[in-house]
Length: 224
Image 1 (cartoon, rainbow, N blue to C red):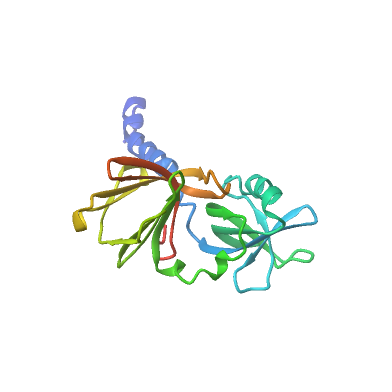
Image 2: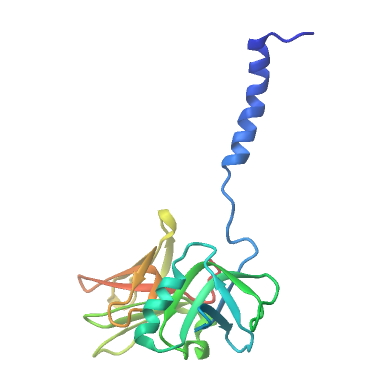
């Protein structure tokens, strides 16, 4: 049977729609990547990454347009030659001269002027850490609860409930010990006002009728 042009078009429409759906489906850029921590240093006009506890060095390639090259250059001006980086990336490529390959960075969790962060014994147990200034405050959350530290006060340990928010943010809240606390974090580049360290979360702490601003990052116990 011969199809007339209108009937032929109607027959092909579902096929076109299916192709369009496949074309529009976003690719998961995190596939094949791993979260890793290490030191950054400059050498020969390149930025090199040395994983914690390893001797290998990889040339940093900003595959995810994260701005890590520019951020590292700015931080190094005030922090010395070496920086700490917490990134999600993929190791690729053959060995280059004086290096062990290439690191394709897709996401930056932390970037700071400290080489002692590799020695943090609590990182793997943390799900979230957030902190701010004026006044100083710091929250560490894990599967066992959260601990709030504030200048001039004793550490406050609290249980909490976690709620996922639209846009990828989360809310931690606690009503224990007569204390109402809420911590909101959202995926947004945040720069620590005192140290210049870069974080991937913007944080807001609400406690005692006050709203305090700060930055945060996901710990090693949270894989995203």
